[in-house]
Every structure is written in structure tokens, then in C-alpha cells.
Length: 336
Ligand code: MRU
Image (tube, rainbow, N blue to C red):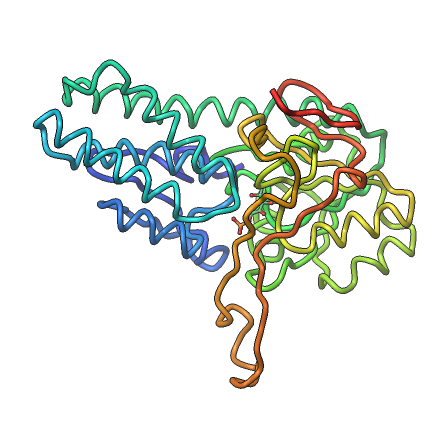
């Protein structure tokens, strides 16, 4: 991979620096977020995106907020916690964003009366959280590879790769590990409309690594299954409810239905930071709805649209959840 974790997102003095994913693959441009508002904007426009990467952005955002906050202890605490709440609310579906924010805030416990010390511990915690997510993805890859035989053709959706995780990837981590073991025939990459995370980001990542892949319109995926071209599906997740219901990029549910119809295994790959024991089922997962502009200018102005960014795949359609600690099989009980 030509991208290191720090190329994707890093904490610098006075800034969270992200690789602007809205411009990939045409241009590799960094975006320096020098205020909490800058970072929230980068999150909302998807300059930094993907659940684990959002968690890292959340943690680093708290570190930035601490750096910018006044040094009087009470004012410091008030400013950092208020900014943390704003960052956590930037996008609603990926539970990792709040997890990262809370992880950074927890690091400051005991140091609130010493803002200089608190700044240091929050910054260190955010950077360590980033590296831990990368290691968790590597573990997911190793566990997930054990599910596949040889000469396999894997389908994924959206981008659950290095870009989405701050390094290595969840679903693409599994793909990488299968490929490294010499057992991958190729990857099917649905475009992932409307923002084309598959066609732009996953295809780019796979191309950079010389991993064989083929991009298809989302609407062609069912035909690829019908033709017997797909041996397994691995997708990422934005939030996994306690019963295993999984929110991921819109289109994932359709992929799971098609996979079940054709008897092809469907796997979710995610670190434990994506599991939300406090959300009982998929019905309680907040689903982000995005602007009609994303559907493009060809939609008549008077036509109403619905543009949900995610959908929920019921646990009953998931054959296994691949986590950093091992492979979970149904029935899923993720309450604790
Ligand atoms: O809207 P996005 O691009 O942030 O959506 C990303 C996804 O749905 C990913 O599949 C998910 O976050 C898992 S990333 C490892």
C-alpha cells in the first residue's frame, strides 16, 4: 500500500490533517482542519469517512479542541466537552465516532484541573487509538482469511479499506489477507452510488496493491451472483446492534438478500468498536439521510427524493461477524 496510516489521518500541532477522500482518485490532496468546525465539515462532506476512521477523527478532534481551549481549568473542561458533543453529532450512524470521542475524553479523567497535562494525555490517547484500530483491522484480516478456501472471488461494497479505517481495512483487510495467502482470484466492486466509494476508493486501493478486481454498476451485482461468479461477500459495518443487525452503506441489505438467495456466504467484518451493545436491534440505529444533490442534476427539481446513506441488514442474513477478537456465529448476542 502506498498509503501509511498517517497519510490517511494524523494529529499535528494545531490541526487534524486528513487525506481528502472526496477528491480521490483524481487528486491526492490533504485537508488541514484547524478548528473543530473545520473537522466537523470534513466529516460531513466525507473528506474523512468510514466508521473506524470516523472514530479516529473523533478522538483527534477532541485533542484539537483541547489544544484550542482556554487554559483556565473550568473553562477548559466546558469548552472541550462542548466541542466533543459537537464532533460526536457530526454524523449519526457510525457508532465509532462517539466511541472515539469518549475514548479521548476518558483519557482526560483526573487531568481536568491541569489543562496542559490534559492536552498531552488526550493527544497521546487519540494517536494510540488510531494505531490500535489499525492493529484491530490486521487481526480482522487474519481471522477472516480463515473463512475462505482457494481461488476465491469476493464481493464487497462501498469502501471498507485503509481509507475507511485509518489503515489496512476491515472487509478489505480480509481481502488483503486472502490475497497475501495466494488464495484470491479477484474482487467484485459495486460502484456504490451515489457517492461511488466502491468505484473511486475501493478500486483505487485495490489497484494500488495490484489486487485483481472488477468494478460493476450496483444494478449488475445480482447478475454476477446468478452467473456463479461470486464465492463470498465481505462488507464493513457502521454499527452492529446487540442482536447482530448491522447498519452499513446503503445497498448492503440488497447484497445480503441476493447472497442468501444464491447460497453464497455473507460476512460482516468490523472491530469491536463498531459493536453497540446499547442498541438492541437494527430498528433503533439512526440512519443518516443525505442531500438530494448527491443524486445529481438529472433528477427533475420537482421530484421528491429519498437518499439514505445506510441500510440495516438483519442478523438472520449474516453468516458470521469477523471481529478483531475472532469470528462470531449466529445467534449473535452482543449485549455485553
Ligand atoms: O458514508 P461512508 O462512506 O462513511 O460509509 C462507509 C461505510 O458504509 C463503510 O462500509 C463502513 O463505515 C465500514 S468502514 C470499515
